[in-house]
Length: 165
Length: 119
Image 1 (tube, rainbow over the protein chains, first blue to last red):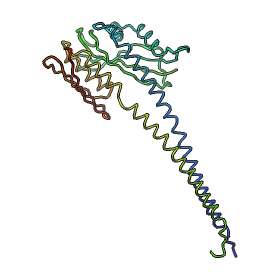
Image 2 (cartoon, one colour; image 1 turned 30 degrees about the horizontal axis):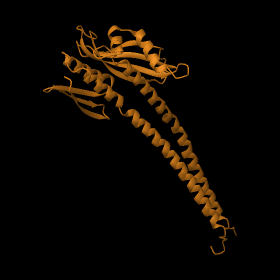
Image 3 (cartoon, helix red, strand yellow; image 1 turned 120 degrees about the vertical axis):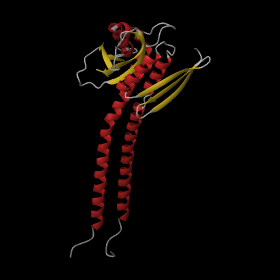
């Protein structure tokens, strides 16, 4: 005659094993979600930093004068952009400079056929493909003969790719 | 069943209670990180900077002689580079100007009614 005394122990063992496996599965799932969540937070901070820098550069010093960003696009002054932008983004209080790199370009519309041209302004380092850049943009109002024969009021879109090296 | 010993049923009961509480704690932990991720995605996806920037750029100069060219610049470039449908109209009234800005990037639709008292 088979002894049936310990049936409850078997049931308990089985259910405990099931619960443990499910718990481990959920916990392992949980840790894999952390990485994209953290990346979003630093991306958000970088985006705010870049947007602020471009916004500061597009504020004229006094009423009626041209903003720095407008001057840079109208006169293609990459060195000015490079110095000011890196100064705004990389300065830190009581620490050495940060390691933020960028690539900048701007886009205008050709008046002849309504096509779009992107003009590369330059960058502090070439993109190799392994970086994880965020894109910040700024609309700039200029008055020049950009993408057209006549010097007139135009709107161009400044685009900057930012990443921390 | 009468011959079975049922003295230690409370051990099984406690085992179940502890197991289920650990299970539910893990469930809560799991859900909390997902909530954080969707929140961050929601914040990133909302084009706050785009809308502010666009509105500022449009309203920064509304008295130019070639507003049609500038409007076409905004429309074409926004569609091409920002995947957004942008349109606006500038309507001069007696001593002010009304600017209506429309923005739609497929997820967020924004309409602004901007009034100037300076022109």
